[in-house]
Image (tube, rainbow, N blue to C red; front, side, top):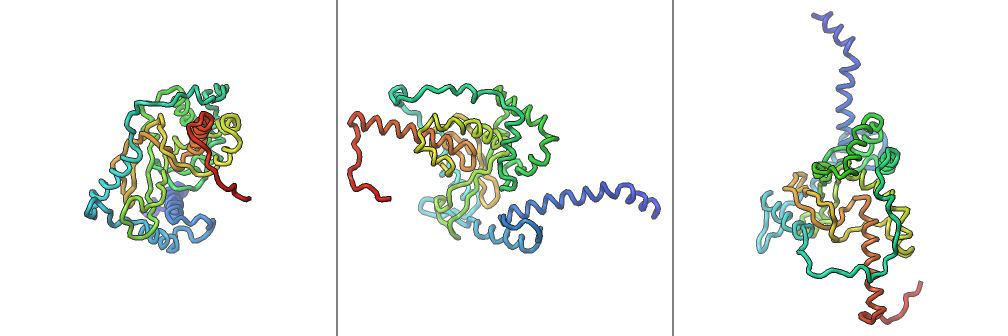
Length: 310
């Protein structure tokens, strides 16, 4: 029996070591991400230091109670309803409008943007992946940019098939790849209202994020012709605005790390989506054109006052 065990370990020792070390490496990376210690590159991996940081973050971000009408919500299901009602009002499909803008009167320039609709090449998708952060917080699928970089040669065939299906509008299953976890980060310990949290962060599914990044890289060179130079400065800033958006998603809010019932996302731009800043700038420029036209027709007048000194 001893000889059999020795032979087994000798033959399968390498494979056994890989099986043990593989999950250990994944767990170490997960602990580092959960601790949010981004400056430390080597050492102290999966140590007490990381565990203390994780526990500290959990304690600070834990939502004990929320204001509910004239009372308080203490139970998880009651807090979930408060959060769901809040985000349903903010992100749900708006009431259908009876009036709309006459876009022809805004003097929008005629641009040839047909190339934006071309099929994605493998190089475009690879560039998008390698320009994305490698070690950010995980989305619903549990993969980081580092995984796609390291395994691109292995997964590129299947991934490009999914990209081609997306381009050909074979998107009946897209909601499975377009989900997001909305993370609430309290601005202080012991919050009372959902609005006491910082701007919600959307941790987006990797597939949707890579597609959005590729679209953003394709759209970026045209921005100087779509909007004036004065608006370009806003492109690299974070943006969040409630505008109608075509692609509906079903994000779920994480309440104390527990996913709530998915919401129907009918409007708004997702924080953390690479395409959001560009869409925000384009939308704001239309508002600028509308205001300029109103001033030109004396519907509005410019504010009079002292010019700012620079």
